[in-house]
Image 1 (cartoon, helix red, strand yellow):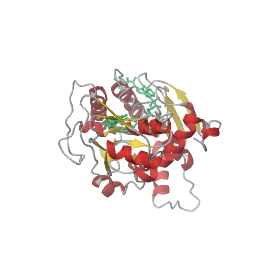
Image 2 (image 1 turned 30 degrees about the horizontal axis):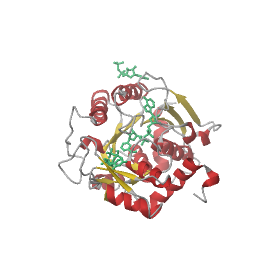
Image 3 (image 1 turned 135 degrees about the vertical axis):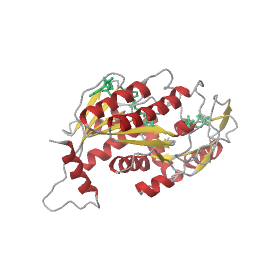
Image 4 (image 1 turned 90 degrees about the vertical axis):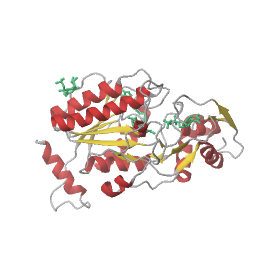
Length: 338
Ligand code: NAD
Ligand code: UDP
Ligand code: UDP
Protein backbone atom coordinates (compact mmCIF):
# COMPACT_ATOMS: atom_id res chain seq x y z
CA UNK A 1 0.00 0.00 0.00
CA UNK A 2 1.30 3.46 -0.79
CA UNK A 3 2.39 5.25 2.35
CA UNK A 4 0.28 8.35 1.86
CA UNK A 5 -2.90 6.34 2.35
CA UNK A 6 -1.86 5.60 5.88
CA UNK A 7 -1.00 9.22 6.49
CA UNK A 8 -4.13 10.76 5.00
CA UNK A 9 -6.26 8.28 6.87
CA UNK A 10 -4.46 9.30 9.99
CA UNK A 11 -4.92 13.01 9.38
CA UNK A 12 -8.69 12.47 9.10
CA UNK A 13 -8.62 10.72 12.39
CA UNK A 14 -6.62 13.47 13.98
CA UNK A 15 -8.76 16.39 12.84
CA UNK A 16 -10.93 16.60 15.91
CA UNK A 17 -11.26 12.83 16.11
CA UNK A 18 -13.99 12.83 13.44
CA UNK A 19 -13.47 9.90 11.13
CA UNK A 20 -15.95 10.04 8.22
CA UNK A 21 -18.65 7.39 8.58
CA UNK A 22 -17.58 3.98 7.28
CA UNK A 23 -13.92 5.02 7.05
CA UNK A 24 -11.89 3.29 9.71
CA UNK A 25 -8.54 4.81 10.50
CA UNK A 26 -5.65 2.65 9.35
CA UNK A 27 -2.98 1.90 11.90
CA UNK A 28 0.46 3.29 11.15
CA UNK A 29 3.66 1.26 11.27
CA UNK A 30 5.95 3.08 13.62
CA UNK A 31 9.48 2.37 14.75
CA UNK A 32 10.64 3.77 18.07
CA UNK A 33 14.41 3.55 18.52
CA UNK A 34 15.29 3.56 22.20
CA UNK A 35 11.71 2.40 22.84
CA UNK A 36 12.71 0.26 25.83
CA UNK A 37 14.02 3.36 27.61
CA UNK A 38 12.32 5.81 29.91
CA UNK A 39 10.68 8.23 27.46
CA UNK A 40 10.44 5.70 24.62
CA UNK A 41 8.41 3.17 26.60
CA UNK A 42 5.81 5.78 27.58
CA UNK A 43 5.58 6.84 23.94
CA UNK A 44 5.12 3.20 22.89
CA UNK A 45 2.23 2.85 25.37
CA UNK A 46 0.43 5.79 23.78
CA UNK A 47 1.01 4.61 20.20
CA UNK A 48 -0.20 1.09 20.94
CA UNK A 49 -3.22 2.50 22.77
CA UNK A 50 -3.99 4.62 19.69
CA UNK A 51 -4.08 1.50 17.53
CA UNK A 52 -0.76 1.68 15.72
CA UNK A 53 1.78 -1.08 15.13
CA UNK A 54 5.03 -0.42 16.94
CA UNK A 55 8.50 -1.81 16.42
CA UNK A 56 10.91 -1.05 19.25
CA UNK A 57 14.59 -1.07 18.31
CA UNK A 58 16.84 -1.05 21.34
CA UNK A 59 20.21 -2.45 22.39
CA UNK A 60 19.26 -2.27 26.11
CA UNK A 61 22.22 -0.03 26.84
CA UNK A 62 20.16 1.89 29.40
CA UNK A 63 16.71 0.56 28.47
CA UNK A 64 14.99 -2.43 30.09
CA UNK A 65 12.74 -5.16 28.78
CA UNK A 66 10.53 -4.62 31.86
CA UNK A 67 9.52 -1.22 30.44
CA UNK A 68 7.75 -2.80 27.46
CA UNK A 69 7.05 -6.33 28.68
CA UNK A 70 3.35 -5.59 29.13
CA UNK A 71 3.04 -5.48 25.32
CA UNK A 72 4.57 -8.93 24.75
CA UNK A 73 2.01 -11.10 22.99
CA UNK A 74 0.30 -8.13 21.33
CA UNK A 75 0.51 -8.75 17.56
CA UNK A 76 0.89 -4.99 17.00
CA UNK A 77 4.08 -4.92 19.10
CA UNK A 78 7.58 -6.09 18.16
CA UNK A 79 10.89 -5.78 19.98
CA UNK A 80 14.23 -5.98 18.17
CA UNK A 81 17.56 -6.04 19.99
CA UNK A 82 19.72 -3.96 17.69
CA UNK A 83 22.36 -1.26 17.92
CA UNK A 84 21.36 1.63 15.62
CA UNK A 85 25.03 2.22 14.84
CA UNK A 86 24.53 -0.78 12.51
CA UNK A 87 22.31 -0.43 9.40
CA UNK A 88 18.73 -1.69 9.66
CA UNK A 89 16.11 -2.58 7.07
CA UNK A 90 12.43 -2.06 7.98
CA UNK A 91 9.29 -0.86 6.22
CA UNK A 92 7.57 1.82 8.31
CA UNK A 93 5.58 5.07 8.08
CA UNK A 94 7.14 6.95 10.98
CA UNK A 95 10.41 6.84 12.89
CA UNK A 96 10.69 8.25 16.39
CA UNK A 97 14.47 8.31 16.89
CA UNK A 98 15.21 8.30 20.63
CA UNK A 99 18.10 5.83 20.85
CA UNK A 100 20.90 7.58 22.64
CA UNK A 101 22.90 7.08 25.80
CA UNK A 102 21.20 9.97 27.54
CA UNK A 103 22.97 10.48 30.84
CA UNK A 104 26.40 12.02 31.39
CA UNK A 105 27.50 8.76 33.00
CA UNK A 106 26.64 6.75 29.88
CA UNK A 107 27.08 8.96 26.88
CA UNK A 108 30.82 9.31 26.69
CA UNK A 109 32.66 7.70 23.77
CA UNK A 110 29.52 6.58 22.00
CA UNK A 111 28.87 7.33 18.32
CA UNK A 112 25.11 6.67 18.52
CA UNK A 113 24.10 10.26 18.00
CA UNK A 114 25.98 10.63 14.74
CA UNK A 115 26.11 7.17 13.13
CA UNK A 116 22.80 5.98 14.59
CA UNK A 117 20.99 9.10 13.40
CA UNK A 118 22.56 8.79 9.94
CA UNK A 119 21.31 5.20 9.63
CA UNK A 120 17.79 6.08 10.72
CA UNK A 121 17.72 9.00 8.27
CA UNK A 122 18.93 6.63 5.55
CA UNK A 123 16.07 4.31 6.47
CA UNK A 124 13.57 7.21 6.42
CA UNK A 125 14.83 8.25 2.98
CA UNK A 126 14.60 4.74 1.53
CA UNK A 127 11.04 4.02 2.66
CA UNK A 128 9.64 7.58 2.64
CA UNK A 129 8.96 7.60 6.38
CA UNK A 130 8.57 10.69 8.52
CA UNK A 131 11.49 11.06 10.94
CA UNK A 132 11.43 12.70 14.38
CA UNK A 133 14.68 13.46 16.20
CA UNK A 134 14.68 13.82 19.96
CA UNK A 135 17.33 16.47 20.39
CA UNK A 136 18.04 18.20 23.65
CA UNK A 137 18.22 21.52 25.46
CA UNK A 138 21.94 20.68 25.78
CA UNK A 139 22.39 22.06 22.26
CA UNK A 140 22.15 25.47 23.96
CA UNK A 141 25.20 24.56 26.09
CA UNK A 142 25.81 26.96 28.99
CA UNK A 143 23.34 29.46 27.55
CA UNK A 144 24.04 33.18 27.33
CA UNK A 145 20.35 33.80 26.63
CA UNK A 146 17.65 33.12 29.19
CA UNK A 147 15.11 31.62 28.75
CA UNK A 148 16.24 29.75 25.64
CA UNK A 149 14.40 30.39 22.39
CA UNK A 150 14.74 28.03 19.40
CA UNK A 151 16.52 30.74 17.41
CA UNK A 152 19.38 30.86 19.92
CA UNK A 153 22.49 29.09 18.55
CA UNK A 154 23.92 28.07 21.89
CA UNK A 155 27.18 28.23 23.78
CA UNK A 156 28.82 24.81 23.66
CA UNK A 157 32.40 23.88 24.45
CA UNK A 158 33.42 21.62 21.55
CA UNK A 159 36.14 19.82 23.50
CA UNK A 160 34.57 19.62 26.97
CA UNK A 161 33.55 16.52 28.91
CA UNK A 162 29.88 16.97 27.89
CA UNK A 163 30.63 17.72 24.26
CA UNK A 164 30.14 14.15 23.03
CA UNK A 165 26.45 14.53 23.93
CA UNK A 166 25.95 18.23 23.09
CA UNK A 167 27.88 18.16 19.85
CA UNK A 168 26.52 14.70 19.02
CA UNK A 169 22.98 16.06 19.18
CA UNK A 170 23.95 19.22 17.33
CA UNK A 171 25.39 17.05 14.55
CA UNK A 172 22.24 14.91 14.63
CA UNK A 173 20.18 18.09 14.08
CA UNK A 174 22.47 19.06 11.19
CA UNK A 175 22.13 15.64 9.55
CA UNK A 176 18.37 15.77 10.02
CA UNK A 177 18.11 19.15 8.28
CA UNK A 178 20.48 18.02 5.51
CA UNK A 179 18.34 14.95 4.77
CA UNK A 180 15.28 17.21 4.81
CA UNK A 181 16.74 19.77 2.41
CA UNK A 182 18.86 17.43 0.32
CA UNK A 183 16.77 14.27 0.10
CA UNK A 184 13.29 15.63 0.86
CA UNK A 185 12.85 13.51 3.99
CA UNK A 186 9.95 14.71 6.15
CA UNK A 187 11.58 15.55 9.48
CA UNK A 188 10.66 16.89 12.91
CA UNK A 189 13.06 18.11 15.60
CA UNK A 190 12.24 18.29 19.32
CA UNK A 191 14.61 19.90 21.80
CA UNK A 192 13.75 18.18 25.05
CA UNK A 193 14.38 19.78 28.43
CA UNK A 194 14.98 17.73 31.62
CA UNK A 195 12.22 15.15 31.94
CA UNK A 196 11.34 12.83 34.83
CA UNK A 197 8.78 10.19 35.69
CA UNK A 198 8.18 6.48 36.31
CA UNK A 199 10.60 4.04 34.62
CA UNK A 200 13.45 6.51 34.73
CA UNK A 201 16.80 4.78 35.12
CA UNK A 202 17.44 4.58 38.88
CA UNK A 203 21.21 4.85 38.78
CA UNK A 204 22.01 6.86 35.67
CA UNK A 205 23.15 9.87 37.66
CA UNK A 206 20.52 12.43 36.69
CA UNK A 207 19.48 14.76 39.42
CA UNK A 208 15.80 13.87 39.94
CA UNK A 209 16.44 10.11 39.96
CA UNK A 210 19.47 10.58 42.24
CA UNK A 211 17.59 12.68 44.82
CA UNK A 212 14.52 10.42 44.84
CA UNK A 213 16.54 7.19 45.13
CA UNK A 214 18.77 8.72 47.80
CA UNK A 215 15.87 10.02 49.90
CA UNK A 216 14.08 6.65 49.66
CA UNK A 217 17.25 4.80 50.71
CA UNK A 218 17.78 7.22 53.60
CA UNK A 219 21.02 8.43 52.05
CA UNK A 220 21.90 12.12 51.81
CA UNK A 221 20.91 13.89 48.60
CA UNK A 222 24.05 14.87 46.69
CA UNK A 223 23.91 18.51 45.60
CA UNK A 224 26.69 19.37 43.14
CA UNK A 225 28.33 22.77 43.50
CA UNK A 226 26.40 25.39 45.47
CA UNK A 227 23.04 24.01 44.29
CA UNK A 228 22.03 27.39 42.86
CA UNK A 229 22.14 26.24 39.24
CA UNK A 230 18.65 25.95 37.74
CA UNK A 231 16.78 23.43 35.61
CA UNK A 232 13.18 23.04 34.43
CA UNK A 233 11.60 19.66 35.06
CA UNK A 234 8.95 18.22 32.77
CA UNK A 235 6.73 15.24 33.56
CA UNK A 236 7.04 12.47 30.98
CA UNK A 237 3.36 12.39 29.87
CA UNK A 238 3.59 16.05 28.87
CA UNK A 239 6.66 15.30 26.76
CA UNK A 240 5.05 12.32 25.03
CA UNK A 241 2.00 14.44 24.14
CA UNK A 242 4.35 17.07 22.69
CA UNK A 243 6.32 14.52 20.65
CA UNK A 244 3.14 13.06 19.13
CA UNK A 245 1.72 16.48 18.29
CA UNK A 246 5.02 17.41 16.66
CA UNK A 247 5.12 14.20 14.60
CA UNK A 248 1.53 14.60 13.39
CA UNK A 249 1.76 18.36 12.83
CA UNK A 250 3.02 20.27 9.79
CA UNK A 251 6.06 21.95 11.30
CA UNK A 252 9.67 20.81 11.10
CA UNK A 253 10.84 22.65 14.20
CA UNK A 254 13.04 22.70 16.15
CA UNK A 255 10.59 22.96 19.04
CA UNK A 256 11.49 23.32 22.70
CA UNK A 257 9.54 20.76 24.72
CA UNK A 258 9.91 21.43 28.41
CA UNK A 259 8.21 22.78 31.48
CA UNK A 260 9.06 26.46 32.04
CA UNK A 261 8.86 26.09 35.84
CA UNK A 262 12.44 26.81 36.96
CA UNK A 263 14.02 25.35 40.12
CA UNK A 264 17.45 25.53 41.71
CA UNK A 265 18.87 22.16 42.74
CA UNK A 266 18.35 23.16 46.37
CA UNK A 267 14.68 23.92 45.68
CA UNK A 268 14.38 20.55 43.98
CA UNK A 269 15.91 18.90 47.06
CA UNK A 270 13.27 20.69 49.16
CA UNK A 271 10.44 19.37 46.99
CA UNK A 272 11.87 15.86 47.34
CA UNK A 273 11.99 16.34 51.13
CA UNK A 274 8.33 17.45 51.11
CA UNK A 275 7.35 14.45 49.01
CA UNK A 276 9.40 11.67 50.61
CA UNK A 277 11.05 12.56 53.88
CA UNK A 278 11.25 15.97 55.61
CA UNK A 279 14.38 14.74 57.41
CA UNK A 280 16.29 13.81 54.25
CA UNK A 281 19.81 15.27 54.45
CA UNK A 282 21.70 17.25 51.85
CA UNK A 283 25.38 16.67 51.11
CA UNK A 284 27.43 19.01 48.92
CA UNK A 285 29.77 17.59 46.25
CA UNK A 286 32.06 19.34 43.78
CA UNK A 287 30.26 20.14 40.54
CA UNK A 288 31.13 18.62 37.17
CA UNK A 289 33.00 20.64 34.57
CA UNK A 290 31.02 22.79 32.14
CA UNK A 291 27.78 22.43 34.09
CA UNK A 292 25.21 24.85 32.62
CA UNK A 293 24.24 27.49 35.21
CA UNK A 294 20.67 28.01 34.09
CA UNK A 295 18.16 26.36 31.87
CA UNK A 296 14.53 27.20 31.13
CA UNK A 297 12.62 26.72 27.91
CA UNK A 298 10.75 29.42 26.04
CA UNK A 299 7.82 27.37 24.73
CA UNK A 300 5.96 30.11 22.85
CA UNK A 301 6.58 28.38 19.52
CA UNK A 302 5.20 25.00 20.63
CA UNK A 303 2.20 26.71 22.21
CA UNK A 304 1.39 28.60 19.03
CA UNK A 305 2.14 26.01 16.36
CA UNK A 306 1.46 22.72 18.14
CA UNK A 307 -1.17 23.90 20.62
CA UNK A 308 0.91 22.22 23.30
CA UNK A 309 1.92 23.13 26.81
CA UNK A 310 2.82 21.04 29.86
CA UNK A 311 0.06 20.31 32.35
CA UNK A 312 1.79 18.47 35.21
CA UNK A 313 3.72 20.59 37.68
CA UNK A 314 6.66 19.21 39.69
CA UNK A 315 4.75 18.76 42.95
CA UNK A 316 2.07 16.72 41.11
CA UNK A 317 4.43 14.64 38.99
CA UNK A 318 7.08 13.77 41.55
CA UNK A 319 4.82 11.55 43.73
CA UNK A 320 3.96 9.45 40.64
CA UNK A 321 7.64 8.82 40.07
CA UNK A 322 8.29 8.18 43.75
CA UNK A 323 5.76 5.34 43.97
CA UNK A 324 7.38 3.67 40.93
CA UNK A 325 10.87 4.06 42.46
CA UNK A 326 9.62 2.73 45.79
CA UNK A 327 8.38 -0.44 44.10
CA UNK A 328 11.56 -0.92 42.10
CA UNK A 329 13.92 -0.25 45.00
CA UNK A 330 12.13 -2.10 47.80
CA UNK A 331 9.85 -4.50 45.92
CA UNK A 332 6.06 -4.50 46.28
CA UNK A 333 5.92 -6.12 49.71
CA UNK A 334 7.80 -3.33 51.48
CA UNK A 335 5.92 -0.58 49.73
CA UNK A 336 3.63 0.29 52.61
CA UNK A 337 5.99 0.21 55.55
CA UNK A 338 9.12 1.64 53.93
P1 NAD B 1 16.96 6.32 28.20
O1 NAD B 1 18.40 6.06 28.46
O2 NAD B 1 15.97 5.79 29.17
O3 NAD B 1 16.55 5.80 26.76
C1 NAD B 1 17.43 5.69 25.68
C2 NAD B 1 17.22 4.33 25.05
O4 NAD B 1 18.07 4.19 23.91
C3 NAD B 1 17.57 3.18 26.00
O5 NAD B 1 16.51 2.24 25.98
C4 NAD B 1 18.85 2.60 25.42
O6 NAD B 1 19.00 1.24 25.69
C5 NAD B 1 18.66 2.92 23.95
N1 NAD B 1 19.92 3.00 23.20
C6 NAD B 1 21.04 3.70 23.53
N2 NAD B 1 21.98 3.54 22.59
C7 NAD B 1 21.45 2.73 21.63
C8 NAD B 1 21.94 2.20 20.41
N3 NAD B 1 23.17 2.49 19.98
N4 NAD B 1 21.11 1.41 19.68
C9 NAD B 1 19.85 1.11 20.11
N5 NAD B 1 19.35 1.58 21.27
C10 NAD B 1 20.13 2.39 22.01
O7 NAD B 1 16.82 7.90 28.06
P2 NAD B 1 15.53 8.79 27.85
O8 NAD B 1 15.53 9.79 28.93
O9 NAD B 1 14.33 7.98 27.60
O10 NAD B 1 15.91 9.57 26.51
C11 NAD B 1 15.28 9.35 25.28
C12 NAD B 1 15.73 10.42 24.28
O11 NAD B 1 15.33 11.70 24.73
C13 NAD B 1 17.24 10.48 24.08
O12 NAD B 1 17.51 10.71 22.72
C14 NAD B 1 17.66 11.67 24.89
O13 NAD B 1 18.82 12.28 24.38
C15 NAD B 1 16.45 12.57 24.74
N6 NAD B 1 16.39 13.51 25.86
C16 NAD B 1 15.96 13.09 27.10
C17 NAD B 1 15.93 14.00 28.15
C18 NAD B 1 15.47 13.60 29.52
O14 NAD B 1 15.53 14.42 30.42
N7 NAD B 1 14.99 12.39 29.74
C19 NAD B 1 16.32 15.33 27.93
C20 NAD B 1 16.75 15.70 26.67
C21 NAD B 1 16.77 14.79 25.63
N1 UDP C 1 20.53 2.73 6.01
C1 UDP C 1 19.87 1.87 6.87
N2 UDP C 1 18.65 1.37 6.49
C2 UDP C 1 18.06 1.69 5.32
C3 UDP C 1 18.71 2.58 4.45
C4 UDP C 1 19.96 3.09 4.83
O1 UDP C 1 20.34 1.55 7.95
O2 UDP C 1 16.97 1.20 5.05
C5 UDP C 1 21.83 3.28 6.39
C6 UDP C 1 22.89 2.98 5.36
O3 UDP C 1 23.57 1.79 5.72
C7 UDP C 1 23.81 4.19 5.42
C8 UDP C 1 22.97 5.29 6.07
O4 UDP C 1 21.74 4.68 6.44
O5 UDP C 1 24.92 3.92 6.26
C9 UDP C 1 22.72 6.44 5.18
O6 UDP C 1 22.03 5.99 4.06
P1 UDP C 1 21.97 6.81 2.71
O7 UDP C 1 21.24 5.98 1.70
O8 UDP C 1 21.43 8.16 2.97
O9 UDP C 1 23.49 7.04 2.36
P2 UDP C 1 24.46 6.22 1.40
O10 UDP C 1 24.30 4.76 1.74
O11 UDP C 1 24.01 6.56 0.05
O12 UDP C 1 25.80 6.78 1.77
N1 UDP D 1 23.13 17.38 40.05
C1 UDP D 1 23.17 17.43 41.43
N2 UDP D 1 23.20 16.24 42.12
C2 UDP D 1 23.15 15.02 41.49
C3 UDP D 1 23.09 14.99 40.08
C4 UDP D 1 23.09 16.19 39.39
O1 UDP D 1 23.19 18.49 42.04
O2 UDP D 1 23.17 13.99 42.19
C5 UDP D 1 23.06 18.67 39.31
C6 UDP D 1 24.01 18.79 38.12
O3 UDP D 1 25.25 19.32 38.56
C7 UDP D 1 23.26 19.73 37.22
C8 UDP D 1 21.80 19.46 37.52
O4 UDP D 1 21.78 18.74 38.74
O5 UDP D 1 23.54 21.07 37.59
C9 UDP D 1 21.11 18.64 36.45
O6 UDP D 1 21.91 17.51 36.17
P1 UDP D 1 21.42 16.31 35.26
O7 UDP D 1 22.61 15.44 35.01
O8 UDP D 1 20.22 15.71 35.85
O9 UDP D 1 20.92 16.99 33.91
P2 UDP D 1 21.62 18.03 32.91
O10 UDP D 1 22.87 18.57 33.49
O11 UDP D 1 21.83 17.23 31.69
O12 UDP D 1 20.59 19.08 32.77
